[in-house]
Image (cartoon, rainbow, N blue to C red):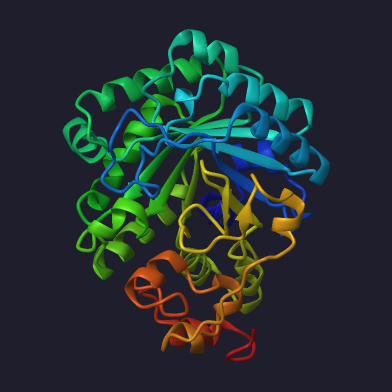
Length: 367
């Protein structure tokens, strides 16, 4: 995550609630944030679904409870329950309760369509945050992208139910060349709903998204988007973040830093906390989108053993390998690189002039 609002003016809402305001590291390779896809079942059919849901797989209850015990022992700081659609798992609320008993913070990532007043009430004071996927301020566009008519209206109902229950709630928008220019109206919708946060996901290339090769933002669209959210983050009391594009943080630092010292300080926001993903079948991946790399399977091994292996890619692409910021950015989204040029290649969505921006480092090429 690149915390645009935090970088621009030190503003945080959800991030402060989850991580606190201290600068100590929230997570690490040994105790990462975990995105746990607790089910492969889903009630929508998104064009870009990274696990190609529905997939008829999920950990049985006994294995899930054992995994939660292990998470508590490792002192995992945060688990993001996702899917598929997590609210289709019948024991979701029990999983939330068991995680809380182990002092693990819980967030939920959902399409929002199944959250009625009763469910929202049961979640109150039990989760740190719920992120709801909404990919446009235009109802028809969202429904087409999500593959189900009426998904937009049901998601809005879910959002309002969550906010009424006092649960910190945010929106998650996947950016494509077909919807990125509507971001200003999307921000207006977010403000009217009263959400705490908006996270913009750069389109990755895993699952069904492999079929969307011509949906990526153009260079001009990218810079218009970035310049807009930098400016809007200066004025709105709503947290704005981006993800799946750590180079966004380099650009933000370049645009707002007053001098080299401030620029280097802002680069600290680019380095990400540790995160791994557990898929419905128990496979552990370096993140939600790197389905082509398995670190192990929680059905067969202890989570602590799997996390101890770690993961690293040596960047060999013509741009990433020579980039002065590669130790901060780590080459952007390795899933996009993998499907377009190879695991060690360049991320095709990085449009930065790193040679020019690199002049703000004290020593050119410093890592």
